[in-house]
Length: 341
Image 1 (cartoon, helix red, strand yellow):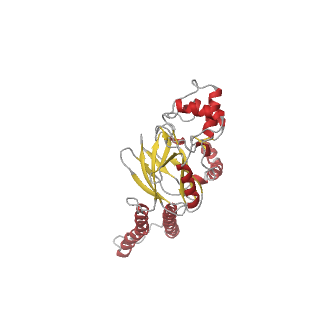
Image 2 (cartoon, helix red, strand yellow):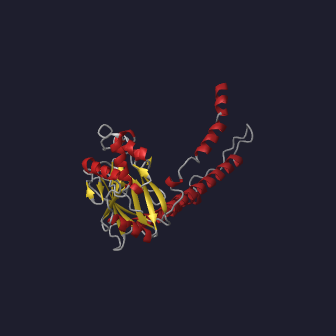
Image 3 (cartoon, one colour):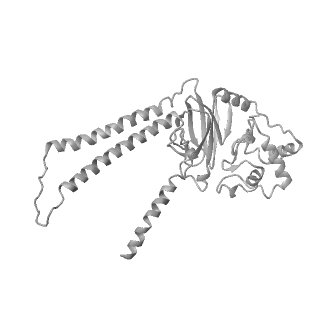
């Protein structure tokens, strides 16, 4: 008995810890701060469900309290059996009708939202922006077929309009998810799933893979950069005219190294392979491999031993093949791949 008393003493501490941990979150990875049309639909459905559940809880708790008070035993000799309600037509109708009404309150908006979220995905409007998303272990590829642009990790889209996505996977099952803009959608091999997203205002929104896909699943991050339409069109034009020409002697040395060792997997300005991420605007990105701060040291570390940062990824390590001077030259070249200037 004494042991249980000691356990109960820890309950207030555990309650405080639990309350504190509820504030340990990333506002960029929450569905509770919707920034897009689809996310708002889903948020409203969650809140509707919450209100219904709270209402049911309050009513049940109230009835339970009334029963406890009214029908409690008042004495040892009080063995009177309360009036039985078996076969009461009114009560039978009541507890059959109320759940049906609650179900309709939840089902009708859910079905309407489901159809709204699927609207236009098979046949987008002629002027709509369509982006093909291909998931890889462990990075994201974004292709704009109408604009003849291909990039990775950073997804650019205009605000105030629906952008349509065609989702597929190159290897295993992944899931495309930008919590503040909309719900997740699986990416499969051999089939294409479709959805749309809408960003209400310019900003940077964070996305993740939401399906366990291997040892670096938790590191499969990407960013959505939402811009006003004019800014997006300007970015698209720069991407279409992007050049990989090196600006300095050191960068030229890095370009030569890139042509020998990297271009078979990575494309720049439309030239190169498609096995690894497109690096056309690598110098504009804030993150390296989606997870590291964009610094020279992190770039060199990634090139030298990518498996240290993302276990299981397919990029080979070049630490034994390139010396410090060559790594510096390659970093200089990569940092010069910009379109935002």
